Image (cartoon, rainbow, N blue to C red; front, top):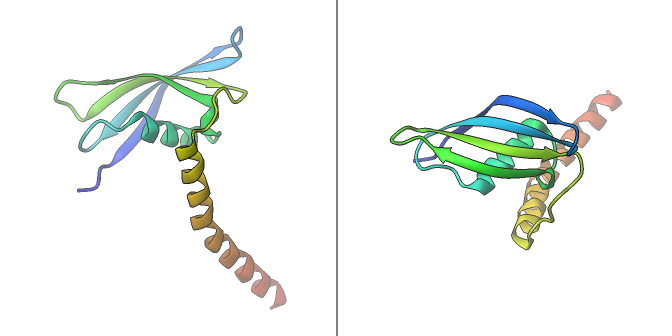
Length: 114
């Protein structure tokens, strides 16, 4: 069974003094509580920023429910360094996306010729 996860941002507070945003979010999932790494990756996609700008403070699973609540801090500057595992994962994703990007470039080049 493939676990499904959807994140919904429920509250955002601008903290100008510390140059960050404090975010509260809700996770709806099937199966086990998602790992912090999975949530970090999904939040980065939703917020359209690099995951090095986000720190997840807490994830709380509701008892016997497929729902969790979490708190994250989003900084304007990168505040953490990627681990070797995260770097390897990022390069794998780029390799997977590269052939698709090449196909799109080839298609647009053909369209321009026509």
